[in-house]
Amino acid sequence: MLRRIGTMILAIVLVACGGGDTTDATDTTDTSAPDTTTSSTVPSTTEAPTTTVSPTTAPSTTGPSTSTTPATDDLPGERIEFGPGAGDTVAVIGVRHDDVLNLRALPDPGSEILSEIPPRAENLTALGHTRDIGQAFWIAVEHEGVEGWVNFAFIGYLGQVTDETATILDDLGERPTAATMEDLGSIVAESLATEAPDSDIVMSGPATTGDLGEVIYDVIGIGDDAVVGFRLHVFGEPGADGFSLRTVEVTTLCGRGVTDDGLCL
Image (cartoon, rainbow, N blue to C red; front, side, top):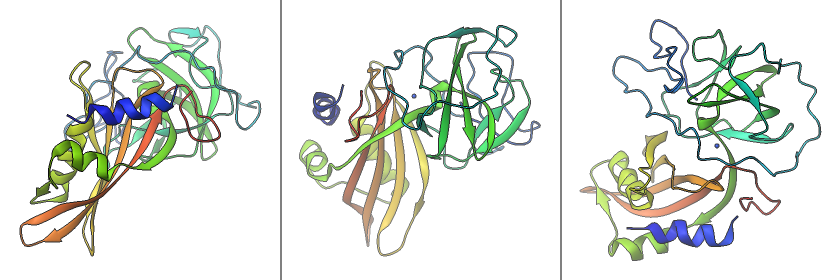
């Protein structure tokens, strides 16, 4: 449907999840499983992609890392020259608003949880180490003074933010309405998703209401390693039948880094 938003953005531009209490965690020793935590009423996040992001060519934005995170063959998996460069600022993507991303002691979904990173956190510092543990890549990061490992599938760079309301309305052929902001956001997210590969659609920000309704969705996995997805900040106008679309702000989610202008590398 709205594939051409992806096409338009791609034309101007050249990427694991978790919980606190291990009694609720879905962590297993199966390396293909995402590192996520769910409550009894919240489904686990979908299986993360593992091999769609190419090695980074982005220069460090904040200088060399002083990390003491071990990067030897004593760790699980194999060290590879892949992923964000040391000192790069990266963000959490594709994590549900009621979930968290586990920061673990080792690149292993069964290792000790050092801390929980909120969804959409933007202040992670990459330490320049990546491990291939077979079915997933893990990267070393620092968050609020704690160093550890996270599943690379839930990490990306935040790129340009653009208003895509007019394009979305033109593609849909009408101003969409829905009973709830969750439903309205889903309509918009579906218009940006792809079927080959199948995109993951995640409500990364809770729906709120007031003078305007708001909700945030991440669409992850669009078949590109530079642009790995989109973050949609959807605003709705409340009415008698629910909400009608007001505006949509789209943040490009990049896999290999961003330029000073916010373009994906």
